Length: 260
Image (cartoon, rainbow, N blue to C red; front, side):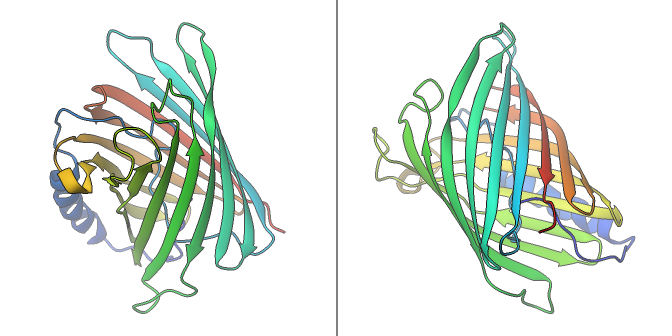
C-alpha cells in the first residue's frame, strides 16, 4: 500500500504523459457534485505489493480536514500489517479523531486481507492484487456502523512513470443501502524524479450504488510527494474535496517496514 517504483530510469517524456493521463482521470472522477461521504481516515491509493513472508510493519495515517463554518478534524489511524506469505498480507486499522475544539473520539477498527498475483505481467510493468476489508465504525462517523470493502488493484510501472487504479466497491452491512454495492474508485499518477523521490496526483470519487450510479457523487484531488528509504516510505498530500462537504484536505502516511 506504500508507493514503490522499482525502475531506476528517468524519462523526460514521462511528465507530459502523466499530465495528460491525469487530466483524463480527473475529468472522470473529479467533477464536483452533491454527494455522499468518502473514507475520511484512509486517503490512499493502493499499489499491488505485499509485505514479504514474516515481515511486520506499520503505517501511520494522519489527515487534516479543514471545514468552513464547522470544527476541523484531525484523524490519526494506526495500520499494522504482517506478511502471511510472499503473496498475502494481513492488516488492521485503529482509527481516532480529534476536532479543533479538543473533542477526542474512538473512530473504529478494520481488518483487511490483501492478495497479489505472484510476479508482474507485460515485461514486469503491471502488478495485480485485491484487498478485502471488514469494518466496525461508530455511527458518529459511519451511520451503518458495519461495512466492508473490495478493492481490485492494477498498477503500472514504465520507466519513471507510475500509475495505479483501484475500482473500489464498498458494502454497507446494514441500513438502507445494505445489499447495494457502491462504487468509490481511486487512481494515482506519479513521476519518479530520482531514486527516492516522486511527485504526482491522486484522485478519489464516489458515485453511489451500482444499481443507481450517479445518484450520489463526491470527489477529491490531491497533489502528492512520495519519499522512500531502505525500510520506510512517506506519502504527503494536499488538496480539496467536493461534496462531503466541500473542504481542504492534508494528509501524511508514514510506513515503517523493518527488514526481517
